[in-house]
Image (cartoon, rainbow, N blue to C red; front, side):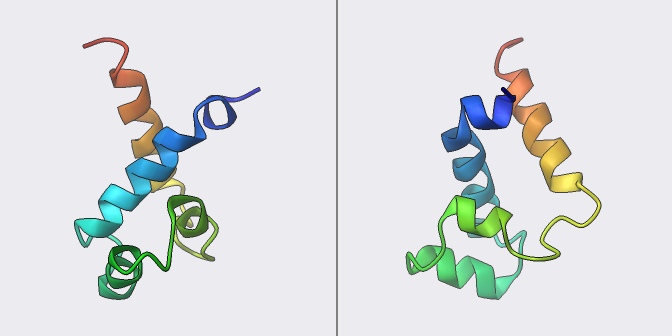
Amino acid sequence: MSVWSDDPEFFDEWIEKRALEGKLGPTIQQDVEAGILAGYEIWSIPDIDPKGDLGCEAMQDYMERFVR
């Protein structure tokens, strides 16, 4: 099992928060605000994270919760 499958809600909420902050562009932000897109759907958008930077940042934020 992976951390992502152990706590998918964290990662879905994490990406939704980034979308609402406008970090994923205005179209995705509007779709999340309108309830059209959910976190798991954002992760599956082609080319949303081609280099894995968002995934790495999400994993880092997840792990930091345990050392604070």
